[in-house]
Amino acid sequence: MKNQGTMSVNKIGILILFLISSLCFSQNKDVYFLLDKNNPIYVVPGLFDNKLDYINLTIRKEYEYHEKKVKEAKKNGTYSYDKESGRDNLNISVPTMEFRILSKERIVLDKCQLQKLRWVDFDWLESESWKPLAGKESDFKNIHFLNKLDNDIYMSYKVGRTITVP
Image (cartoon, rainbow, N blue to C red; front, side):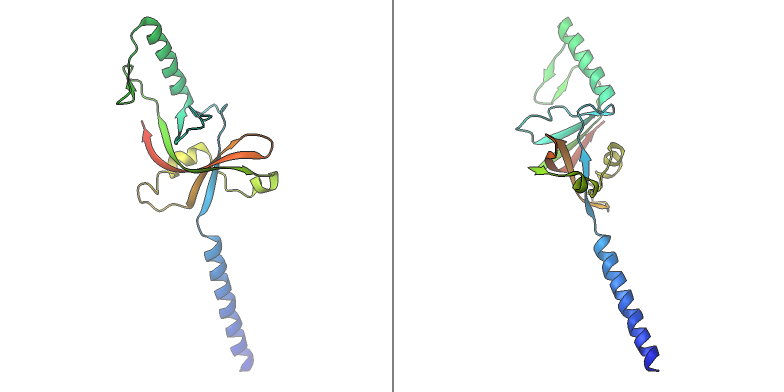
């Protein structure tokens, strides 16, 4: 009898440890996105501006097309830009995800530390980063953008998603 009672206590103890460890490890983690100025999918206009309040990820193809059309319109004298609305007269849609910078800091990360981070890609940002803004359940705590400055030195931007411009 005593053996069965001890086994039950052991099973309950193991179950409790399993539940606690599951809760600890299933908590939402921060996610990381590496900013790449040469990425073929997106462009980050103004990334290297020290007075940056927002980071915009813009679809490269549409951005470059718009820039080409701006140059042509300026050359022809037909370009106008309204500072108040933030729009020009070209009516070209440039899909953009806007992220507000909540904080930034210069950090040092070696290869081992980088491997331990939870990395996300551009598609993930498009499909998941908006969820907290809309009050939806998400599987991450914070989003960090990393901009490589030197060997192991990065500028880390903790960001919050604001809007998507179609």
